[in-house]
Image (cartoon, rainbow, N blue to C red; front, side, top):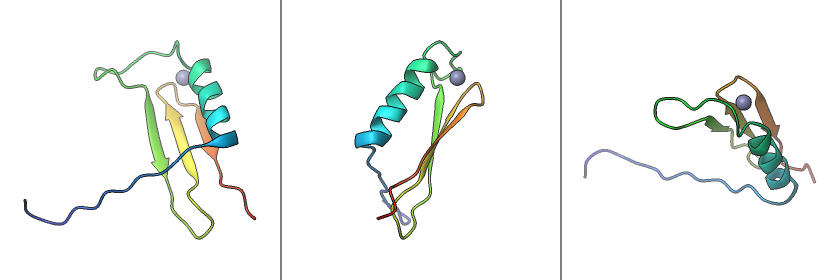
Length: 69
Ligand SMILES: [Zn+2]
């Protein structure tokens, strides 16, 4: 092993998961890329949690924002 590495993960649960599953269902028919992938996940850790953005290969985006409480 050489170099530094860092394992970063995030959780999608509750309302966010419902919205994600709905989005994935709506885009289940979209074309896949050559690797069989269809979605790109981006996330932006901040003080309030981890806002996430899911982009389908068709260009549509779903933005999931953590609740501000
Ligand atoms: Zn799509």
